[in-house]
Image 1 (cartoon, rainbow, N blue to C red):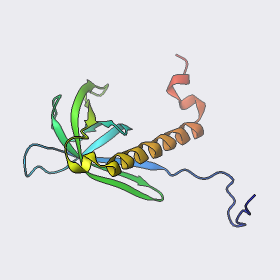
Image 2 (cartoon, rainbow, N blue to C red):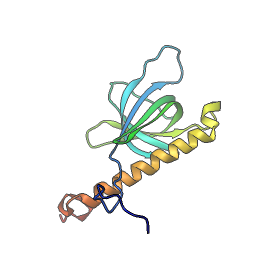
Image 3 (cartoon, helix red, strand yellow):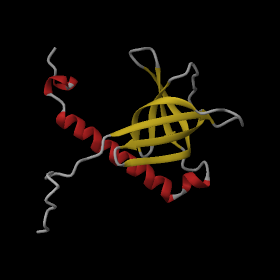
Length: 148
């Protein structure tokens, strides 16, 4: 068994806290600026977002994303991520949630194994971060365990 550093008191490796930042713009048009969006769910195949601006999207609209995963230990950043709006759902606060699917055939960068690997890494980090949050969250705050 390897010797443990005397200054290191942790017995279990600490998982990084993660924050997902998303910016979007329509892919059609030359001078569109990126606008912030609130990332909801994330997988290596797509994500869902709520838009912070008054703009709206339609099913089938192509968008370009900037995705940034900020962690205590550093940052993962992806530019020029192509996606297509696949579904739109109304939420409780009347703010639509857009389901975006990554378009891996849109460009050479999207076809690269590096892009797929980076998206997979982001998914894994967010998944571990969410599991950690659930582990340390008090039971009475977990919605599915509340009694009506």
